[in-house]
Each structure stands twice: as structure tokens, then as C-alpha cells.
Length: 71
Image (cartoon, rainbow, N blue to C red; front, top):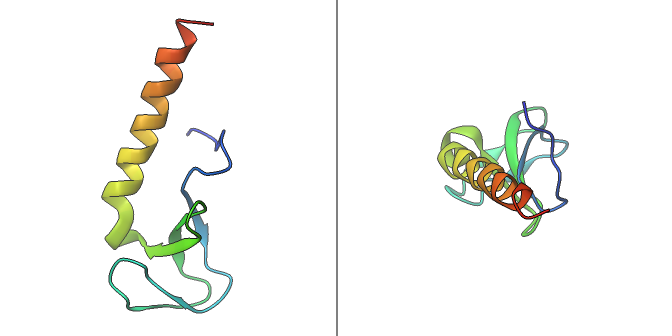
């Protein structure tokens, strides 16, 4: 599994506080697994944000591979 290389990368974490999902607006309970988007400080349910999260990870990996050719 890839570790976060950049501070702005979304990551899967455990919610530390009760909050609301930025996608669906439903509550997120403390202790629930969520996807956290640091750039906007947005929490989201796994089911709501998983597709975007996976797409972001794939984009970061593609960019990393592309940049390795020019170092």
C-alpha cells in the first residue's frame, strides 16, 4: 500500500469527532472510518467518497511514475 507522500493527499482515517459528510450531508460518528480530504478539510463516508479517493490515488501514482522518467 502506498503511503501519503504529499500533505494534501486524501487519506483513510478514523473520525476523531462527530461531523458531517461533505458529500451527502449525513452525520459521521466518532470512531467511524472515513476519507479525509486535507486540502479542503472535508470528511466523507467511505461509501460516498471511495470512487474519488481511488481515482485520486491512481492519479498520484501515475504522476509519480511519469516524473521518475525526468529525474
